[in-house]
Image (cartoon, rainbow over all chains, first blue to last red):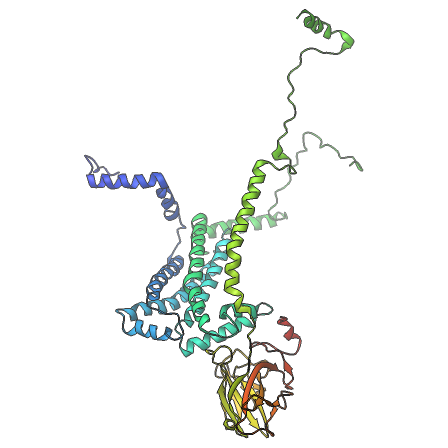
Length: 278
Length: 236
């Protein structure tokens, strides 16, 4: 507390603090928020490490704009394209919300791949962050699947045939491919069930999975902390010291990582094992 | 009392063996939790909770997954589709016709090729990834707009990525009151129109796949091979 903080407190501040204390004592939200948000990070953390948050923010934008679009969109082959025309041309700011959703999808794919590249080139996937990488890979797959299922919903010729091709690529996977394709299409041919099925997958199934895995991803990041970038001065010093130790050990003709055995004999002789005794 | 005292004093001397008061040695503790074969209350209730939870989860998931997937895996039921009288498909022409089939919404079309008194029906689905191919009458060839697959007049691959020829529909010709006039015996020959009158109806039936020699095979999806070792990738 600053030295100016003397005298009776403002009653509004007091009431606010009391309310916060009430919640905090019953939930531990202060501890949790501190654990989650106020962590030590490496000195060299830069803008590169913000790509993951950008992807998450884009997911949030896609969720909000998608919820609004679902209020006007009709997942029926006879009215899907028409309802999108209504959204674009008649609903107030519909062109804006639809544009945000459409371009946000492309931006999300781009940002997710940049994030993937950053993690790869910084070596951040290494021990102990392997499972963070695995959850991220699952999130990547789900993001791509969102792209596939969302593309069909426009229900124009390009969307239709592009999805036919994509589902047929799925079908050409050995052994299980034809079954997966049949389940995706809701039958051997594209039809009205395909559209409503893709709509359900696009707005209910995968967003739920993505929210779950984003939560896991964030938990692991909070638990393990941000990795040092490869150009970190501290990390380079550690690596240089390791390299010097390795060279010194080579000069002494000792295998790296081993200590010389002390030349002191053990105080008590070890109990001898009798040959043949079981 | 006196007797016991006498015992005690005598204890030290008889036979050199001490039989006086000894420290209490407890019986070895028998904890059922250390015995893996014994079902304790905790173990029993843990098992009951796991089994109950499993049954309840299965009771929800099995119907849901079956509801979502089972109908999609059913084979299509095929019936004969009447595509018009024979006079619509004169000899020497290849005409494109919609085959609504069991799913009226599908964009399935057939090219009815009538040449030299025989008719075959080629499905317009590209054998590569299922795009609709187009027919160009000038060269009497088929071309796919998606990835450049090209087929000759009988639907056999001439260039591009398709792994096998285009699929065919079964064809038959019946009189207007439903009597069979001619049926297809082999895909290479097609159905003979020699003995048919112009008002006889042309019917399309179950589709099938062919290889380069026009031998019939069970219908395969786009991208699947019908011959060679790689055809075993799709055993079911």
